[in-house]
Length: 145
Figure 1 (cartoon, rainbow, N blue to C red):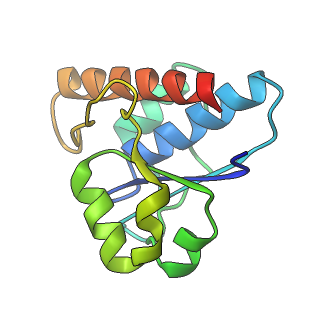
Figure 2: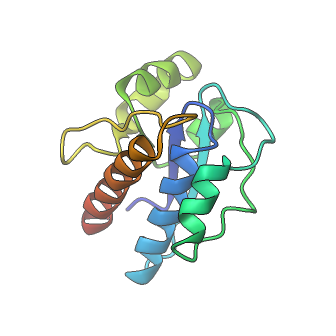
């Protein structure tokens, strides 16, 4: 069973914090106590979640205020039982950080065979699409975990 899940994107201020909080909530609603964290392959270390991400999650009564971006490193990668990434290039970047992570790293959109494009500084339509894909990926994984 997966007790420690790491969600990864680029800056760790948009997609991965959203997915982290949504996946944690989804698993807790199933009665699972799982540690879900996030990091970035090019993190804006110490930054809070991006304002659009914060606003979109606040509309769902999810508070991203506690989040601070952190850089994926060997210790963070090895501490996870399962690593979920937004795009295939994140898997490659993590493999450069720690080759041992390769076998436990999957797309958040693995089951639906999709990547989640970066909405950072893009239109609301792009954000809506990204969050919709995150919702789908989280739901697909939550059913299987």
